[in-house]
Image: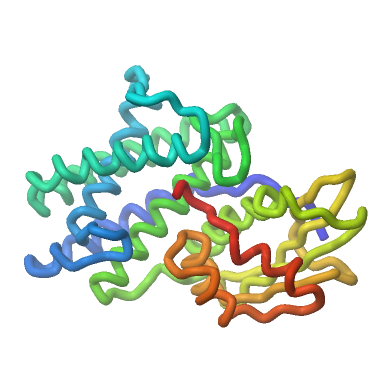
Length: 279
């Protein structure tokens, strides 16, 4: 086993953006109103949301416009989620006045600027926002950007599925998503007690899959690549089930039927409760 390290995603954003623009240019007029996996959002709404998040990054991080102030104090994780959801809702309502062609043009303008901005950030410096779903209050830029990459990938995947287009499920683009998602494991297991030295094994199968492990050290769970030599428990699920589970696209109950357990199932099944997104 080896300790997990930073995930490099900056070089992947241009490719992901190009795939998005190519996808959107092929959307027929009647397809824009198709429902997506995001409740209440059409293909057009979800496309507008992608424009929103990218515009916010450039406005508040690159151009340093003062951050929006929440109407209510943020005292908890749920308060933060509520604030983000309200920002998303406001934008979607307003963006319904924007036509598909303009949405594509705006994304074609904003996306490359965002890719260039990401190149200017020191990956090891403190990020503008912490990755809260991993339990962090301070994050490095590399983790914040990896989180951004997972969100852009997941939303584009949702668009592709709504439109019946092939997904971006090859190893190059999907493995960094799964690797980022798995960084939520120590936080997910934070209240699970186990003897010192206990090892848990987690395998995601498929072309973009891999092996991760949790090891109990000094009263905390630490994340590693690889597999413990004698794990107390193990869980294995395919990459498709995994990304849907971690983004709340399927329920833990549905995912359990697609997961193979070894050893202490109660211990290994904690992964079914992992959420790697702000929700």
